[in-house]
Length: 283
Image 1 (cartoon, rainbow, N blue to C red):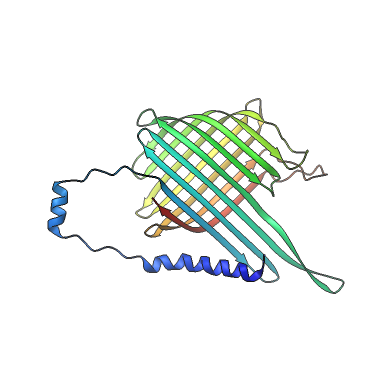
Image 2: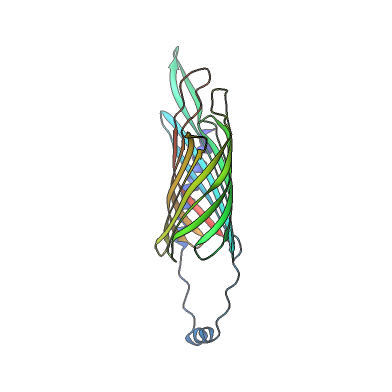
């Protein structure tokens, strides 16, 4: 990627991060008479529509070696008693340029070091204030990890261990099936039946800030040594109406990754990402 394009993208992202905080202002108070009338005749809550957020992360380093990373994510969700739906996805790409000298000539080498994307769809149906049933479909591709695709479809029974205005913690489990394929014949291309175990936490620890965390474990029920485990933890802070800063750590673990092509050397079992960027929210 041309260096001027990388610098332009990085400068634009820095400007986007600073501008919203400068423009944020509070609205003036309503007149006392109007407030009293509103209190006397409360307006019914309007049914919630889809709540959507879109995020962007950018990173750039230069000098004797250049590194460029860009990522994007989205999440849209809707709840209407007793149903709730979530649809989300993310994509990340990165490349590095290194310099070396051969026969007196300066040589630059471009290498793609990040290239992955994934998406999910989850539906829940509330059985009571705490219990719910649901279904989930998720998929992921990771070129660097040698994963062509992994698709998991699962059903679940869930329960809220904690359900408060500012703190929720739920656990869920249920049967499903995993389809996966790697980029060479040395991979563990086994499709298998699974039981998905998962938990989700959200804590609004300040007026404009929240912490979110999730974990899922999907073993092969006929061979518990074959499994995947995914974890996410992040912090989000509102900086202006509809805008927030977000820092997220994601970890992906595969107990049997593929071998490097033509060798008996196995790839790393663990892949992780630390992402920071700006989130735009709208209804």
